[in-house]
Image (tube, rainbow over all chains, first blue to last red; front, side):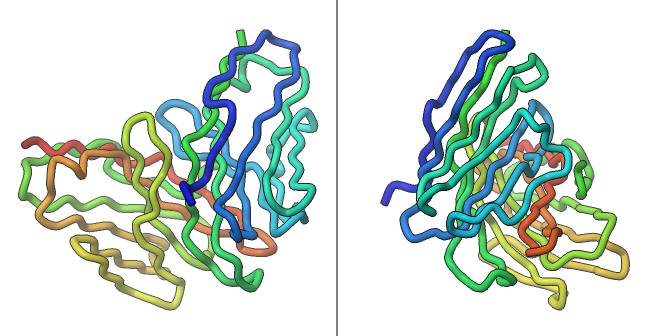
Length: 117
Length: 112
């Protein structure tokens, strides 16, 4: 297993276009997280999946953002009608299976860098 | 939306010296984790400390947690040039405890 993978690694799009990113977690990791990181800042939590269920979602997450994990394996993050402020690194992480209230380290992917022109 | 705040924002030391970074947070937590991020790369988990623990060690790393002061510290002993990176603390919140909030990070430079 080579870790968490994300595709594409870079995406340049024009304002107003829709974009979709994919995350493949480490196999058998049932927890999956999406974050956004801008230059000089720490990652900002977007959403969390336990298997296919989206259990946590940031209140700051615009309605233009949607995430899915249909079979409890890979996940997609879609941004509709992109804005220049969406330019950032989008990070995915996964962690070990366990009870909902247990806590384990997260393994991060390399990220997808989005540039909105 | 950032929960944690690291201090200092930047730290520069000579190889072999110890580096101490601090993290303060605002609300009660389930656990606190420290991560490292090398320039242009993903984050790597360093250590997790639960809210009922006060100190934890892992190799050259020592983490303390003071829930009464809502603060944590990360000590890296005998630093190496390869320790040059940004260090972030992350606290967990939310209904499931799986909303993780990262601080703004401490940028550590270890000079060979």
